[in-house]
Image (cartoon, rainbow, N blue to C red; front, side, top):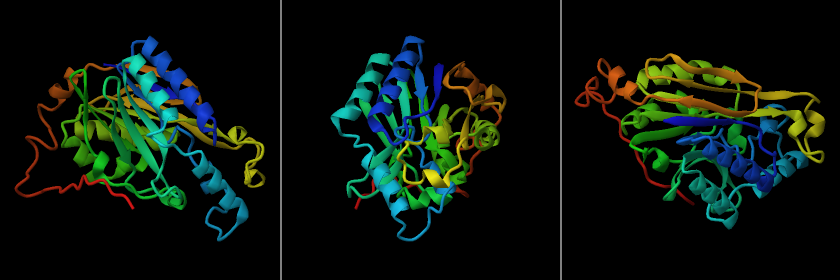
Length: 303
């Protein structure tokens, strides 16, 4: 399976321009023969970088309210014609795609950190909403649910995906192992410091390939009229990418890539998954369901 992991920067708080970046990268990956394309967490239309760099929890601060309002305004309606152009780009590429999206909630006043699974034939086949936003993210994103804790098949390979620190949640990982996953996409905002340990750990624990993909962010990306610019130093580096890929033996296929923008390619020999499970299959022959059981609710929750 040929992997195209997209390490790039979105057009921050600009949905339309970021969609064009996404479509261009999908076309590039398709032309390069990709079977699977992976984008970072909420690449469309950007990670809320201000929450860890400003007084984001301040009560009734107009600049914070305005930042959130802009983020909400630029969030994505997955049923829109505009997002349909992304689905069409995936169809033309022939590659299964995981795309991190700031998804507009039905209430129109909240957003989810969503990982959208797009099949080149069937279109959107899954939307996983991050179960628990991490730390400061809880000021921006709503809690998700288990409806997206499922696998998808493409070209005979079973694929799964989780966002950021969900990959540190033992039960979330186990739920994905239990689907028979062979390739797991871990979508991150960016930074090798986040990806380099857990990527190899998941790969060896699950006996799967893990594609960790992150973005590159710095303060130069912020719009000139962003209401919190005065609180963020010029030249501030937020995320350095850190895209990497590990095999089911826990060894690197691609070591963490820092700062570089572009597509990071890899060829995965899927048969290695079965070989590595000869002595350990965490939800198969090495499990004890009579002693240890995991109950997963895959109900879609909505207001």
